Amino acid sequence: MRRQARIVELGSKFSLSTIVTLLQAESKVHGHSPKDVELGELGSADTLVDVLGVARLSEELGLAKANWWSTPIAVGGGTTHFSGRTYPNPPPAVAEILRTRKFPMVRGLGDQELSTPTGVAITVNLAGKYSRSHPAIRPEMVGYGAGSKEIDEVANVLRIMAETEP
Image 1 (cartoon, rainbow, N blue to C red):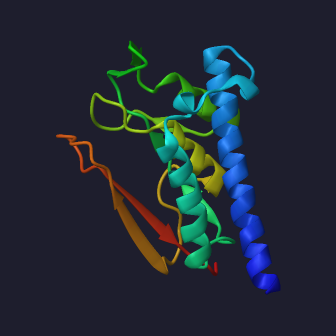
Image 2 (tube, rainbow, N blue to C red):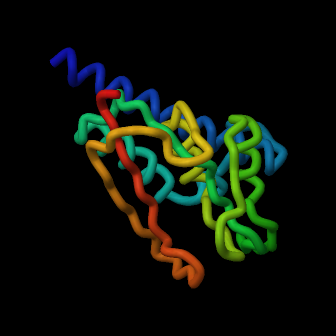
């Protein structure tokens, strides 16, 4: 029972810190207080499903206490359209999250948005460390997720590898 309570605590801490990261970035780019941020500015109700889903799955897979790494986040090029306007990539909230967390980014392939504010907030709150290339690890688990956006230049796939015991 104590182990379950600790895992729930870790998941709750991750979920809260991720939502706070999004709130702070959105409030900064929209020029108002975090308490005045609307759900639409956080992306959508899907944002909560994504954040809570990552927390729950990491708990179920025994990865709540894993050491997470990330390579620099690919943000894309060109422009993206939302809220009735056109913005250069990375979108303002993505740039703000990366700036405040001092997390590296790369352009990546393609002239479209490659990273969303929700995805970036999840990444910077999971990954305690980053590496310019894949770190030297012994992967114990490998998982893939695919996005629905069709990108000609590259597969729209995220791969994560976990090493639970270094």
